[in-house]
Image (cartoon, rainbow over all chains, first blue to last red; front, side, top):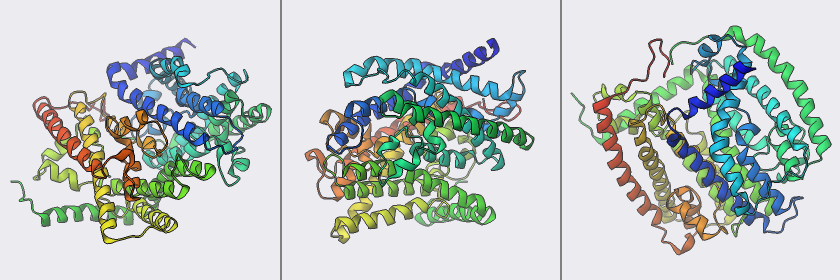
Length: 255
Length: 282
């Protein structure tokens, strides 16, 4: 375990090595996205349309989504293991590859959690946002979301091997899918044309949207957790199997 | 010896880029089509989020659903133009600087500016979003029953040019940091362009002025689609003149030009050392 913690620590240091000042643009963009988004929802929700969520729940959902963004839709460095030479680092160390990726990724969350999420969580009352979870089962749903996120990420990473390094292409598709289908930008229950009834059963809905809905108190907790467990049970074996088959297909040179 | 730069020469350079783009499409059609689809899916996903909200709530902050669609069409056109002319990292300039690739340009017998303005031209693989944008624009215009005149089309083109100018100028402005910190700031243009794109799709109508003003000045996301769309609909927001985006574009371009040149001088003196002996970047 100590090795993984060290890996996570190194990953956090890697991000801050250039100096915290170089993280400021990202932090600034996050803040500058979150604040207008809060007011956008205030404007939208003031229309009085009945959507099964109160303004308070909507703001909580949006705010927590921004604070935990990295954890709600996991993205490891695996997609770039050919183009960025990630595989060279991973296979050169005496640790399981997937374990390293998980530790690296989790370590990489730390700087933003400390520099963005923590201060913004403290500032939440200023924006009239409550950060008290509606159900403590959120703390079970979040780890299930994270583990499912790793499984989905590994599947995408294996797909990048099949696509012979088209990481950018895959990144675009992945970003598009997760933006709409995970419910991290727009809660799935707000989707129009009856899409919400179908969309909640697809695997991406068990990523960010699931814990956020539980936190905000707009989910059927039992059903949401059950779907998360089911998708973990389906996608993890699939990810491990595809990963095992994909390793032999890795070819890389240059940078 | 550097070539003499004429308008004809620039067209020829654009044609070279277009030819290479077409060759890639024909040689690797499967992946080229996949790339085109990925571009379209990515953009549709971004703009559809706001449109779905508008559909669900019957508009946003005084803008009707069709007006939001018009704004999303404008945003898609911008994305299309950006991809058509900026597919060679020539707008994501911090990547070229940070990766030590400016040297690749220095050895060409062409001025840097000419290379950067022509080498990202990909009309064949990059034109899909532009076409989608035109279709969305036609639908929105039809639904809004706008009276289209020659002057309106010229205005649309002027706003598109202005928005693209602001995007490029801001990218070059912040990318100047990369001359001094090539590793840390390599992706700063992505932060400036891609990181802010979601905000640029927000209709700011109905929001408090203390949110609107910063998004038209410090962080000009309101100028990416919202302000131009409302201006084209005949009601520039906040009582500002419809020429405000043009003035902003001029000022930020001047600032970017000055600071970028300063950084370039530093880079020419100091150079960059990004590559490890076995090929990967540091």
